[in-house]
Amino acid sequence: MAHKHDHSQVISRVSAELPSDELLCDLGDLFKLFGDTTRIKILYSLFESELCVCAIAELLKMEQSAISHQLKILKDAKLVGSRRSGRLNMYYLADDHVRTIIGQGFEHLTEEEE
Amino acid sequence: MAHKHDHSQVISRVSAELPSDELLCDLGDLFKLFGDTTRIKILYSLFESELCVCAIAELLKMEQSAISHQLKILKDAKLVGSRRSGRLNMYYLADDHVRTIIGQGFEHLTEEEE
DNA sequence: TTATCATATGAATATAGATTCATATGAAAG
DNA sequence: CTTTCATATGAATCTATATTCATATGATAA
Image 1: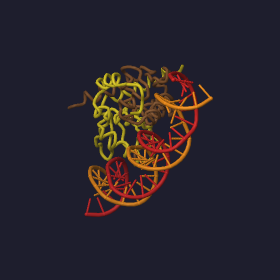
Image 2: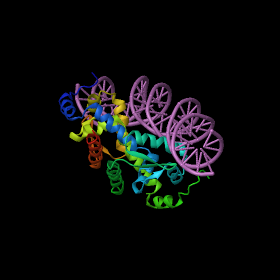
Image 3: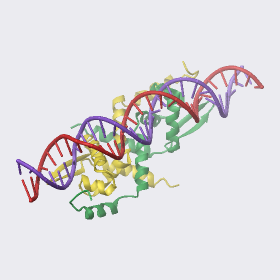
Image 4: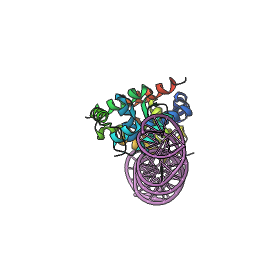
């Protein structure tokens, strides 16, 4: 017993409305994907057109390896897809929610200036 | 020079459309806030009603200290606010974008089952 | 004013995750 | 088939950050 007050009513009410632990974890994992500058930049770059790994690396002035690692994470999460084109590996946005979610974040930031 | 192909055209085109580095960082930082299960749970709990720290701690079965630390992060980011009520410190959602953003993530997850 | 309750907070720890380095893989050109 | 180019990947490193522990703070009740 840590406290004098009895919160059991509020707790059971709120608890009932809370999604499952698994879903809440998945939500966290999803947003974690957007919670990294490199990944945000990659996704944003793909808004315009598909790009190969080395183009992204040049664009972001980062090592090819770092980009590949992040692309793998994004691909595992099915936010991006890839296809071969000759020697290049072209990556593209695989999910339109990406645009919506990033767009919402964008709005939040730009509407914020008090 | 790392590659034979010349991506300069694509790069300058995409580069021109890319938001500033600062904004992209802010975007990452924003999503980082949602990228943690504990914070997601806290925010979700506050969808229903304002809650005091100890109620949140009980609800999530976590230590009061851990909750306080996370609440501080959320408050610094102005996603939640707080007010005194007797001995309790009540926290509430301070930004409606929170609902929208989490809602979008939710949709993404629930629409995903192929 | 003192004791108590609710919360905040600094330091320490533990863990996750991003980047780099070296190298493997795999397709295509010669 | 060999070489080269583009990418992928495992291991190591380094940094960020979530949680815990101990304790400080600050308001209220006695």
